[in-house]
Image 1: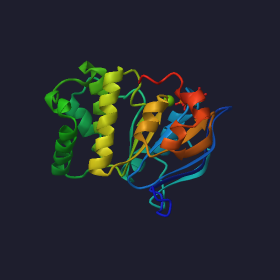
Image 2: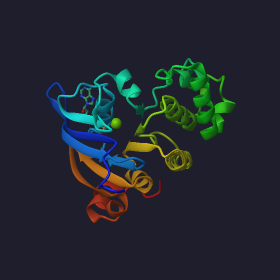
Image 3: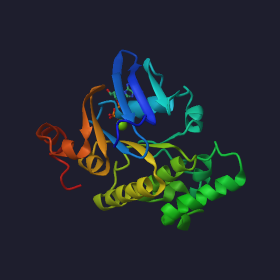
Image 4: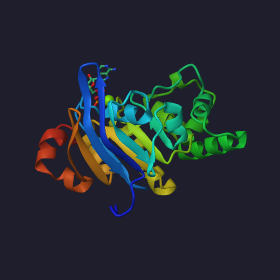
Length: 245
Ligand SMILES: Nc1ncnc2c1ncn2[C@@H]1O[C@H](COP(=O)(O)OP(=O)(O)O)[C@@H](O)[C@H]1O
Ligand SMILES: [Mg+2]
């Protein structure tokens, strides 16, 4: 991706503390329009903290986040209105609500009923299985369907940048392949810019254009995903155990 263009999402020197724990120690990354960027890192590296801090769900201790050059607001609902949506780790669906009701919850920045209906149609076109299950309670869906619904709910606000926190977590390999194929299509067909964090580093590197490595709250490496996937140090640290998925 061209570095001469301005980044759509820019995170500079972001730090987050949980009491005495420094979960992010000045992390910086850029996401350019139309690209998929992945952040790989071990359990506890700070990946979810990064996502939640962008979304305004955890307090930032320092740093600056901009979208299209404008300072990102601090509160979660304002962040969504500014054009960033998150499909969170563990999906966090409203289990006693139906598929349709979950999608409607994601649409709160849209003002007109017709806009909401139009966006539901678009999400159903991406995930026909959700349309088949429109009136079913989210809690009764399979893991893969729940992940589709979490992504669909995030798309309902018509984001400019889609954040994905561990979309492969807890899913069978064949379902992970299906979800990642869908993400590729959403990127290609809708031109959707994405930032994805994953413990499944191989999948994330195969999906993304560029990647950052997060290690205990610090970005230690970044580069083209293709280069990183062939980097012996990355291979030894992150790719050894995930060859099959
Ligand atoms: N709510 C919290 N309170 C205290 N510590 C937390 C909280 N959430 C995460 N942490 C700690 O912050 C670090 C980063 O966590 P997290 O961002 O969840 O990592 P990852 O998503 O990469 O697994 C870990 O040491 C974790 O234990
Ligand atoms: Mg996490």
